[in-house]
Length: 587
Image 1 (cartoon, helix red, strand yellow):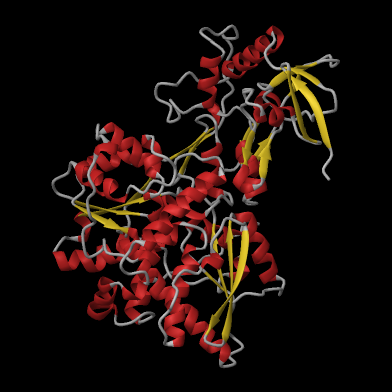
Image 2 (spheres, one colour):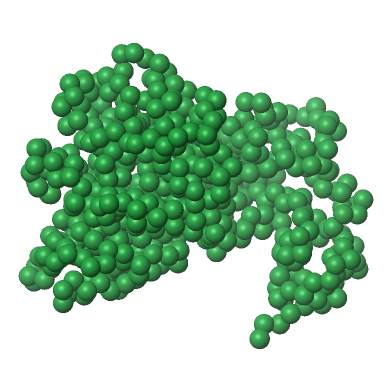
């Protein structure tokens, strides 16, 4: 049995497991100790508690100095005081010292209104700065396709470093130099664009201030919407509808599909389409690839590379290009749904509707910051015209709806436009970890066996465990599948593949916790597994309520193949729907 210790916090007695911190014990009995550097990423099994900011200091009887609650372990009989004058003064002075080397740009900062340092300044009633007159330490600023890095605003909480190095195992950023010249940056103070950054955006999601923010495209979007010479269409990822409502006070897991469509029309989009349509298209191509490799493998072709890896997640693609360039022939060559949609919109739909491609603006709404980077990849700009012009996040869309004074919760439901708004339930579940695998299995099973599925729910691939596996009976052949979310878990699987210890035929990988539902552009959740479960369940409800639940049954997908593509993996399908990868390793 786990050893317990009993202590006293502000006249309250509590018994906790040995090894618990004072902060954990206090929160268990409802005592709120302020924090800044500390964050508990419950859904990702990582705690960032470097005790570097000292905002959470408390008094412990018998100890001369104040103790950081986030890093001090509870002991038997300990007596803790969290609100003495000494404690309150110390916290206020610490906050003032942090603010003394922080830009006073709150009115124009992207984090304004959601800044944890700003919230602490209000909480500690800081109305003037006793430490001023000095010169702010000049640090690097950088704008990438996805992330804006302003190290003038960095408070060195090191949350971003924890999530990048410990959770995602990317290792793109870390602390360099010492003293007032300390900064968080890639090795050798390089630019992020020259680092191994995957643009997953998890660093942005945990940054408490405005040091790391997403690159905002809403002003550009409003200019395009106001331009009568342009036709502006939009696609919406499945995970967006499961989280957007949270920005308007709705409980996590509230599906707002219809309200979202209505709001997008109110904003002025000419057509409102659904990325779920392209998710169904992705399954047709990716499923065909799976069956092609499996067929050759079972026929004894020793050149076949297994496992085949899904390729829907651009952060994951960037990860293996940088860190596993020796495995570039393993992933599926199918483009992500975002890029398939853009390609079909610019090169098929635009021709059918008579809209010149150069006048068509394709915008995506995504839960992900890496999607911004993906739009900018050169291979997705044939003739210099991008298939997807730019992407905005769920948070950006929420800000835009509020800016337009649209009463979101009061809106009626509206339907997507056709043909690229029609989808099956298989497309809807793409936003949750395991969803791409489940969608593929529905089509692969029926194509391989020639039999109709009696039960379309492959519940064995669902869940939030970091790595999962399942064996699927394909009419006598046992298909071994693996699922991972979080790049740290992906690294574990890929190291096994690299070292010849692979046990799977197909692996699905998503970069973010929970998959797209936990993306870096979603309403902030800090890894809270209950929020991620609620969002995932919302997508499974949407799937269950769809009249069609298998990608190959989508009538508009069938029409697209009949009129344009011929069949999956055809020459035209390869041109429009597939891609290739690059060795981006940094020596």
